[in-house]
Image (tube, rainbow over all chains, first blue to last red):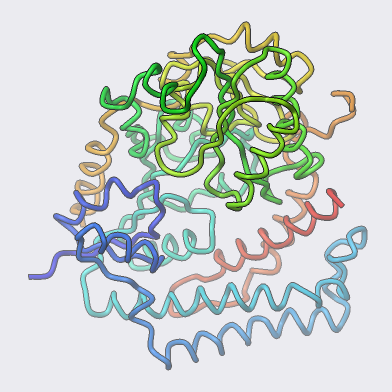
Length: 397
Length: 62
């Protein structure tokens, strides 16, 4: 007998849940790459895009063209003057990019919707599980789940460190239930207007391993990176530029932070342990190494899985903006310093921050923040709590 | 650059274009496409909002 189907996007932050959830559900992935990864783990799953047929794709293209033609018509008629102060948002400017972008996204969304509907006509759908609701994919699954009356569950992939605002799309909660990382995330969503009765503190499944005694200790990690005996190690988690997230001077803000940490390492004669954000281009690893060499700063550059090696080797960790790397460091008991950028900011009980000038002094003052880490993340056991939460809510139907 | 000269949305609230982009996205999405009970409007709203926000950000950042 077929198991009930659980629709999900495929985000890596919920990867820990795939195997245990597969015991009770057939997981259906919107992202084909994630489905293939799950299959490589020995799981039997459904890749939604593989259910697509030519007629479905044709119908999706037609539906999107109809919607896009409205935009083209408005641009040509000069009635799409969104903002005269921004050339690319005037009617003439919009015509150069908006219809094409819109058509691409909506064609993809409609085609995937066809595939989901085809599955739903053949199988019992028990629920939707999201790691992110505010993307085209997240909203598509959320809206579909709501339309057929199954529970939509959201385990947010990370805390939001931007002040709550009705204009922040992350405040637009469509999910029926939120499984949050800790008290901070719970309170953030309540401030957004979410029903407290539908919020459960689960913790963060992808952080469970940080509480595991099996990860290497500081001495072993330092040996792995050939840190000279007695040398201070400053950890730095790089970030990547996102146009919708980095305000101020855009990419230059991240370059400024990098220059500040290089300078601090020169002042303190410290070993710089860089962990490169997985979203950055592979060439950036060499970029950081070259810049360290030019600045005369000794250290190591790490990219890929096993970030705990880089964290454990660090005596103190510096992060540009309110990076998750800072929370991961705090969970491991590391002192953390935030280099501010315009935009997101850790809450007041979190790491002390600076625009950069007094970074060496802040590194001296930085202390472990166990209470803050506990407020941000509910500790080990998140995977088991999350699996039980999904099972319970999806079997209520 | 002095700290006081920075535009800091954390201190000032949402980025100046965010409210405008959200309003525009909702207006454009409204009634665009309804399909067999599954509302694609909120998906379109997101696509529009993301696109407009990127253009505002690019304009601000040069």
